[in-house]
Length: 69
Picture (tube, rainbow, N blue to C red):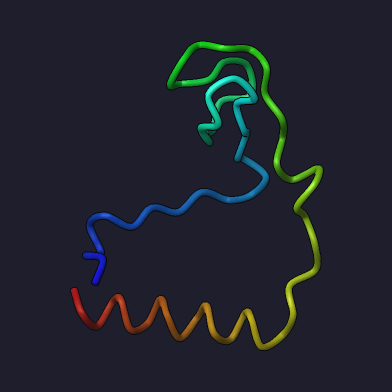
């Protein structure tokens, strides 16, 4: 099981994929891993309306993680 300290959250609007090293970061100008400028804003290809059940499942997951901490 993954510990809560290892989990990370990044809103899709802030996520950029480096096309050189396949890392995801939150800088729109430069990859934090390799300093490449070949970035793809993931929100342009992955943004969608969340299903109602997915939001409920995510909320339940967050509550369970908070209780475990």
